[in-house]
Amino acid sequence: MPAVVNVNGQISNEDEARISVFDHGFLYGEGVYETLLTYNKKIFLLDRHIKRLRRSADQINLSVPLADQELESRIQATLDEAALGDTPTYIRILLTRGIGPLTYDLKACLSPSLVIIVRPHTFPSEKLATKGALVALVSIIRNHPRSVNPLIKSNNLMNNALAMQEGYSKGANESLMCNYRGELTECSQSNFFLVKDGQIRTPELGSGLLAGITRGFLLELGPEIGIPTSEAVLHQDDILKSEEAFFTSTTKEIVPVVRVDDHVIGEGVPGPITKRLMAAFREKIEHLCR
Image (cartoon, rainbow, N blue to C red):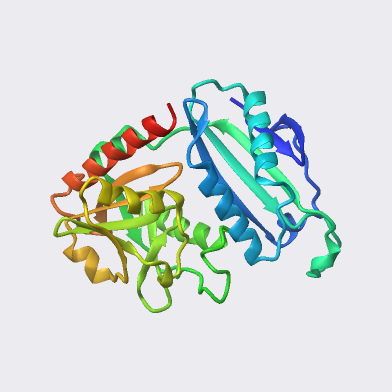
């Protein structure tokens, strides 16, 4: 089914949607974005996504042109036009600097551009959930925080794209990056977690990574179901010592990892803690989006 697109309040199908080639999001990659999902017609963790959109925008001196309620109304209008019913729905919000002349001067763009894309969502295959994924530890280094800070959910995804392309060349489902100090950070499209001695650990934000919405949610969910969960500085050796691993994102939820390059994680199948967390996550979705 074609996507429905809302460009600055004008809703159309994907073939008719238009934005200027002089938009600085296209010219310079100046913009931020969020990806959301609906379950049972309800947007999951919408408030957290809007807060992060504003934080990202603030870090590049970009104003969000709508108040929270107005933004929610615009998203809902786009969802209503798509009319996908109970089908899980993918929503992408893109906010750019807007249209202006060929200059980096912030004053050149008079108003931001706001684009909302809505389409049916397809989750990762059942095989990944039951058999597990392969992750490649790639040579691409995650952006230095004093370059394009990974805490900014930027429309400029070249770093992520190059990492994932290397992973694809190795037959991997995801690509894991380190920072300039050799610490583990995150995957090209998701956050990364390890399990050792019954405890879940994920790289800390200080290592240079995006504060994923699902990541943050799981840091709260783990203790709720009796699983110690923490952030830590992690290295490649920690992968070798781990019993389980998984990655998370809004669009993929929780995906077990059974291999990193040639190293088999645990028994080479999704582990009990990962499966327990997956089940608890689904229960939370059903509770919050019923």
